[in-house]
Amino acid sequence: MQKLFKITLISFVVYLSFAFFVSAQTQSSDISLSINPENPRANENVTATLSSYATDLNKSRISWTLNGQLAIDSVGQKNFSFTVGASGSQTILDIQIQTSDGSFINKQAIISPADIDMVWEAVDTYVPPFYKGKTMTSSQSVVKVVAIPNSNNGEKYIYNWKQDGNNKVNSSGYAKNSYTFKNSYLSPTNTIEVSVSDLYGNSIGNGKITIKPSAPKILFYEQDPNLGTKWEKTIDNGYMINSEGQTLVAEPYFFWPKNLRSGDLDIKWSLGESEISTPSTPNELGIKPESGQSGTSVIKISINNMKTLFLNMTKTLNVNF
Image (cartoon, rainbow, N blue to C red; front, side, top):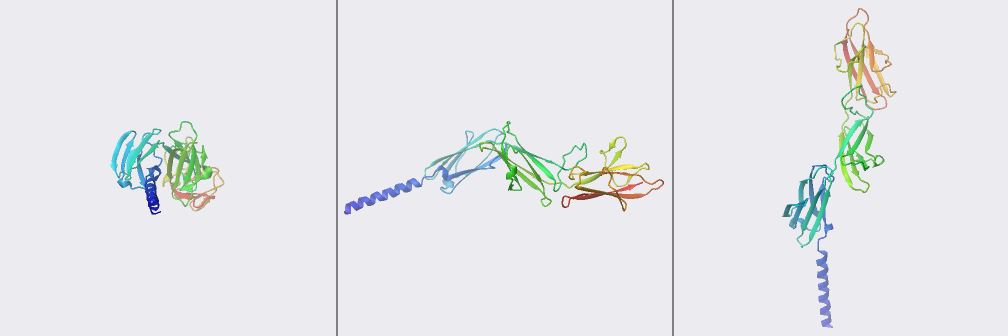
């Protein structure tokens, strides 16, 4: 009985030692590979990082191979920075890790950069006819953002939109490459993000843009009876109104809505201390001095959007006659 006991005990010890040896081997799943940024743009610098809670990578021999060319082979080299290629190209990163327990682990990342261009437009803010600049957005106005993947070959993608970090589920989905929102007077800026993927879930890229509303402004112009509004030159204080009369045009740049006859707008004019009835074209004022009189006066226009908070402005013009 004593001999049998000894044999059984030795076998048990050998079994435990074997079980411990097997469980100590490092597996591929024990080592994580992260790419930052996760979806790089074309020709962007990228950093790959290895991490593990199962083995000490500081004691591991790590080789990094980029597109078939060995770049680094060193102990404890957990990070590797490189530049990806042009839009639509593939950058192949291979990593071999030899851990301190003798395990060999291979990791690979295939990166296909794709730029997502983000463009925006103010949907309903005012600029005068023939204005050549970009129509800016103002507080509480409507903005449309469009995502344009540079790698798009006619295929329709899935777009997931965020505004200021909040997912916009109703605006996201198949072929929804634009996002429209109304900015808040409480937000000095709005950050719009989009992630784009194909129908198989493969990432196409990410886009991000920050939009800052502009302050609307009123500029005065002279209207010529034959040439129309002379937008090439603004009217400043000290403008002389001739004895035959003059029509002044007040242009409220970047105010909304763009329809100046909208019932949402309250437009008022005054001359000196007297209020003037709003003209049929609300931003144009005809004025003619009384015969034989001369002097100075102050013309004032105020514009108020009655559907919003704090969207109003006033402009005065000192004139001579």
